Image 1 (cartoon, rainbow, N blue to C red):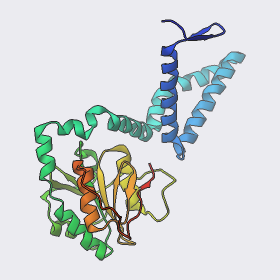
Image 2: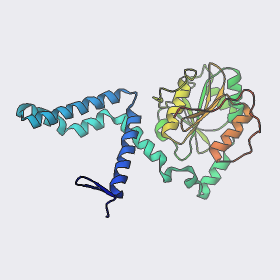
Image 3: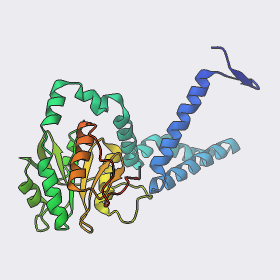
Length: 283
């Protein structure tokens, strides 16, 4: 390969430049995953021990070198155990952005297209409107390319036909299933009382409670769409890819759900309603 330029005895070509850029992107993504969490301090502690090991070995301190060397020998295994949540989030982030996980790719198959078009949004619109009027909180997850089996198993499996009355019963404040999220998969209510991952993003407005943080956390690692009804304000919101569309009316909710779930380009109103707010991007 013909080098582009040289720095001393180093010859730099296109391959080296691409290599440096990919490493930079990888380190930046790693920093985003670790920043603001305890894992960053643990990572800095491990890095300090490794630098100390290099200094001790260069200085010829045999006893300390052996002790630190044994520790560094199991460093990879220890890092996998310590950083298991962060590694899992990183792999989920990579899997989410691959072409095979793209919903448009799966919709090229006839059975995926037919399944998506069968989902009726009316029960969710009516249930959200009724729950918002009573200031009753709700968290409904619409799965897309993944059935979210891991999160569904954290709650109670239901596998029931979708209906407004069932959704109202689940999120009733006296119901044992009202805490947590409902997961919709394969046009059925798959599970209730499900636990979602809470985002660690510190830029989220204080007006967003735990339901919004859980919705943002799930959409950061999956391509799901989450419907949130705030218990404090009764406002309805949709979350996708960490982006929050707040204070939606029933009509706005139907249009937005159609756009996000079925990728329809419906004509938007020329002037937004007075109560609408701009989406809050906290990703």
